[in-house]
Structures are given as C-alpha cells and as structure tokens.
Length: 130
Image (tube, rainbow, N blue to C red):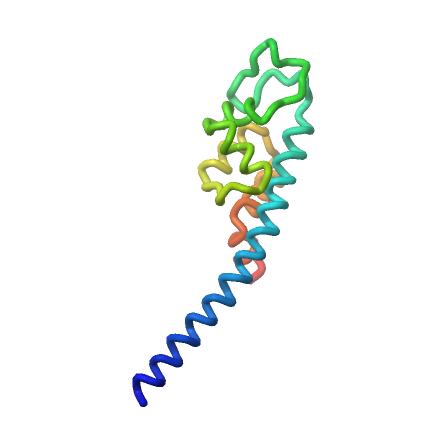
C-alpha cells in the first residue's frame, strides 16, 4: 500500500511538473518571439548616421547605412550567428549580463531597459505580478 501511494504521488508530481513545464515552455516561446521582435525593431530604429553603438564606434564605411546584426553583435561581444538567433527567437535565453550589454549598445532609456529585461527573462514579469 505504501509503495502504491508513493508511486501515485511520484506519478502525480511528474504529471504536475510536465503540465507546468509545458505551460512555461509555451509562455517562453511567446516571450522569445516578443523579445526577438523587440530587438529587431530597436535595431532598425537606430539612425543610419549614428557613430557609436554604446561605447563601440561604427566603421566610417558603415555610417549612412542601416545598422546590421553583425555590428550589434560586435558591439555586444557575441558572434553574429548568436545575435541572429536572438533576433529570430531561435536562441536559448540570454543572460542578464548579455541583456545589460545589449541595453548599453542600443543606448536604451530606463523604460526600454526594463522592457528588455522583462522580455529576456520571463520570470521577472511573473514575479512582478505576484
């Protein structure tokens, strides 16, 4: 009887975990696409004639043209492929350190920075709603 109860409890916990995980995974996918969209629109809104991205200076040849994913990646210190994956929503979650470097490169206001962190780390939004 004890083993049966333990087995039911374990199975129940596994099922409960699976349901929670599936819900969290669905929320994460939604927030990843919002995060990706946020990065893409912010990159495209940077004026082509901007000289710097945070403390990183753009090459004179690139000025006057739209800011590329490669330039953002270089300014932040990650590979172009990793940034492309972030902007397309295919990458695993970004660390807080990376989000901080992105906010500096984009020269975000406090409100935009907060939004970036809330989209990049979905648990922050869940914690704020409690």
